[in-house]
Length: 77
Image (cartoon, rainbow, N blue to C red; front, side, top):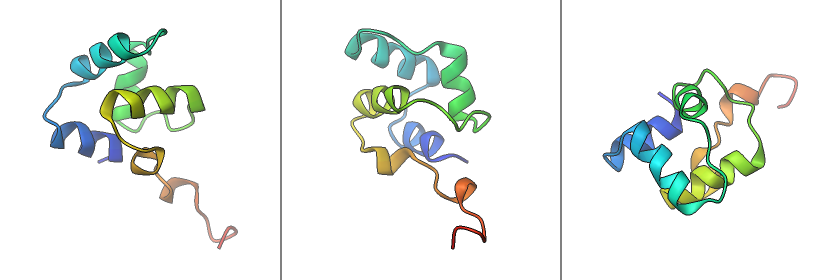
C-alpha cells in the first residue's frame, strides 16, 4: 500500500473525491487516470507540481507522500 493510499483511506475519501479536491484548489487539475496510477503505485516518478497539488488537496507535506524505499538501493547507503 502506498503512502497516498494510506492517507486517502485515513481521510475516508475516494480517488474521485481527491480528483475533485485538486480541481477545486488548483488552477490545473491532475487527470483521474494519473491519480489512479499514482495512488496504486504504478507511477512513482511524477513532477514536483503534481506532488504539491496532492499535498494541497490533502493538507499534507511532501514528506508524508513521498515513498523513499523504492529509490533507495545498497549503492545509496
